[in-house]
Length: 130
Image (cartoon, rainbow, N blue to C red):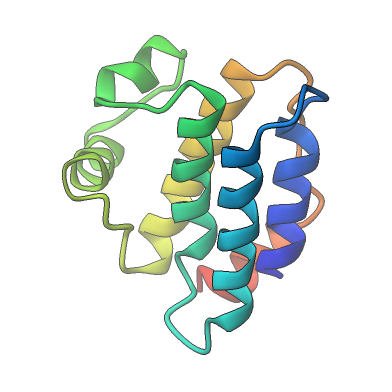
């Protein structure tokens, strides 16, 4: 399920460009890491999204970056974001993971044209976030 989501994420976010060995090596290493993960992989897709947006040039540094992208951030979501941005550790429970995923998808949608809905998202949330 995570691999399906990552595949969709890459399809939606990577555009044709000249070769980029650093980005290619990053992607290969991340895919190998997912393949080798035997447990503790429930946050892999969230960590991957955060790392990928660094390579794409729009990594968030503070909660205000999300607000500036037009994302409504209530106090509960703000707490999640502040924790992730300060520690780079992903949420531990399914409810917070699901909230964080929704925020990150909106953040990607703001920064990437034609970044529409995911086919795998409902399955991912059902399997990983519950």
